Length: 146
Image (spheres, rainbow, N blue to C red):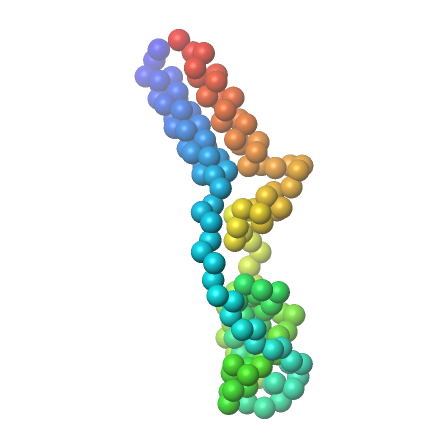
């Protein structure tokens, strides 16, 4: 076997091993979450009423139905109530009546738990499953080489 062929074989084995490790890592069940005490929900109100008075704009980060939405809260009582907009932002910068809302379109790995990942992977055209199957096939093929 030539050194070039040997190098190609080593690279192929490393790629297959990396793919198998990735597939096994993603397939492993996640550790159970520790139960958290439920936080009291902050009531949401019409955003128009909130922004009529001095207010602060922020990105809602609690993992609930309003996650990632642009929200507004009155400055004098930010925990009393807040208005939630339909606008979703990763980063927010507002001032003087103008602002910027940066949005991101996430890929396959933007999930918060295993169930979300499985729901997003879909039955058809699942590239992760195809990669895992290819890795197993390559492993079986390499075992058969002298």
